[in-house]
Image (cartoon, rainbow, N blue to C red; front, top):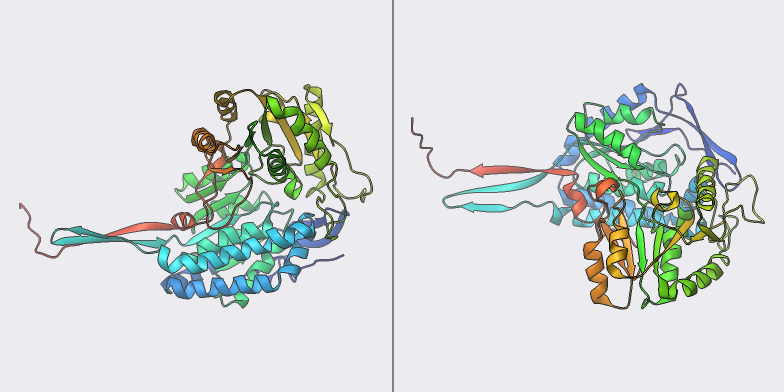
Amino acid sequence: MKAQPKASHFIDGEYVEDTAGTVIESVYPATGEVIARLHAATPAIVERAIAAAKRAQPEWAAMSPTARGRILKRAAEIMRERNRELSELETLDTGKPIQETIVADPTSGADSFEFFGGVAAAALNGDYIPLGQDFAYTKRVPLGVCVGIGAWNYPQQIACWKGAPALAAGNAMVFKPSENTPLGALKIAEILVEAGLPKGLYNVIQGDRSTGPLLVNHPDVAKVSLTGSVPTGKKVAGAAAAELKHVTMELGGKSPLIVFDDADLESAIGGAMLGNFYSTGQVCSNGTRVFVQRKVKDAFLARLKERTEAIVIGDPMDEATQLGPMVSRAQRDKVFAYIEKGKAEGARLVTGGGIPNAVNTDGTYIQPTVFADVTDEMTIAREEIFGPVMCVLDFDDEAEVVARANATEFGLSAGVFTADITRAHRVVDQIEAGTLWINTYNLCPVEIPFGGSKQSGFGRENSVAALNHYTELKTVYVAMGKVEAPY
């Protein structure tokens, strides 16, 4: 099984190689097979990509938003036409089941291009401000060259979530995917050029930890958008702040999912499973602290165990498979270490915790895992695990659970399951998080803003709000009379 691209980088509308860069091996997580070998960007490659973006951006910005949007919508059409091909590539890149990628990955990227292509003309308007005889107006103007730094859990989606608003607003982008998942973004760049995007506006370069600083610190870069961990976010935001660059930080979480005793139990369990096991638990917004009101705790756990143990684990290319491997052996080892920590600190293992039977032992598989009797001070309740590990905690009343839910440095997401809609709104108003759900979990359509608070970052992706983070406001005062001065 091979997925070797034409070259490692896509710059100025064409594939580019520089074998002087460090070798990056793309490993298929289901088998451990190396499916592609690429090279990290050298400083010369970084300079070439940023120069191409800087050269192409002014002419693109001068086009009408409608004309820009037409190209993005065509890219969305091409992505939908090639959904199967792109989904299979995403499965090879990440190990996620084809059952999942075919409905959640390229499709959400296409949604992003379609949405921003459609709203650009209406959303990028300014205001008219009457000032008596005089007046003023505002306009939203692009920032210039933007850098996108992606994570490995949704590589194609993130490439589009960052690229679509940046391009719609009139910017150029240099995108660096994670070295764990280098393949999908190259196809996105290819499709954009095929859709009519002028060369140089969307460039993809591969890289590792040494590549990010070359991009972030470059004087021609105006904005950095990162999806990643909190420690990485702090480093990137600090470097960007030193040069007063615009930043969007979409970082990690340890999100609470609260189940009250009047909730529809099957729906609450389904929401908790989606919020912990989808994408093998590798989702930043996952509700990994599941607070269950004590009265329904036993029933919740019994049914959760039954449904979890029925999950189909296997070959990601088999459409019957519901859970694939983790993205890498290093990530799986990290998750196993947390599982052992949970046991050692006294959490009760309800199910999982090991390697599933009947899978390729060279793959990076792990059983979906549930811990009960978890307390707030346990490591597994405080730190982001980023794997299929659910922590179930007990609670008695609303005030208690709100206080405990907020007792974290993170603030990305939260969910509430209850039949009392008044209580639902009351609780979400008190939860310190950027994206919240009532009686569902982890739905992120492009029409709504997505992002966090506290240590989970700032700025928003998706929705019209994202355009504000890829533009700045220019104000123009127009005097209609003569200037009078006291001197």
